[in-house]
Image (cartoon, rainbow, N blue to C red):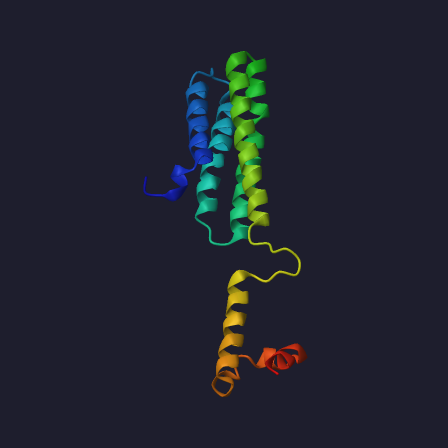
Length: 166
């Protein structure tokens, strides 16, 4: 598997779902082409948007495509119901499809929430990288004030830092 998203369980489940849909819709009689087309497109859109979202670099783009994938999963829900009502699929197949869609949609919802929460800091806390850099500047300025005074200038201006030197 050359692409990392292919290892994702939700992607694999989406592809399996699409494969199942293609197999089921092949048996639909003539006159139900609109259902076949809509169901095939919506199911394929789930996996395609997961793949595209994983290829994006910004959180906003990833969130957008995961949201589109989740919407495509929701779009699939009424179509098996219609097929069941018209006798095109069995009750067991209908239940299985809805369970699989629910699992895919819940996983995508978790990803979207995770994308929103990833990188957030608690109020009043600095990112570790910035904090380490600030401490390194302070230590360097304290060890050799003449040489590193420009690095620590923002900190040298504070009264508490000046008091700690005395």
